[in-house]
Length: 153
Image (tube, rainbow, N blue to C red):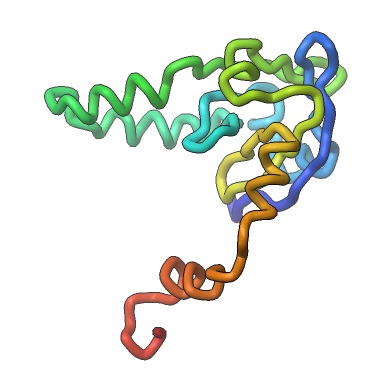
């Protein structure tokens, strides 16, 4: 997989169902179009994994040392609420109410590609995050993507 791209503004219905945007679906491998795993994200959003990518994540969790407190705690917290959600015949998924509540998601949402997963944000929270001061973005980009050579800085 080369990675997902895009930002999609959507609404969830009164039952908590989300219609997957067609442009999002076009980016999926045919094997990953029938079911996702939805879990708590590391920010105030939900993470939506394809089943293939969830298998990669579970492999990393298996590599944790279960005799270390921080590893056990992380695995529990990371997986808390993780739910398999099937895609119905109308290309909708039912988002679990407990996860919607945790992320503060109301009706309007933004689905944002984050390399190998999709983040599902409450629109107002996402808008607030994206309106933060971007003055330091050049330095952040250099730190994160600039490489390790002293000539790159």
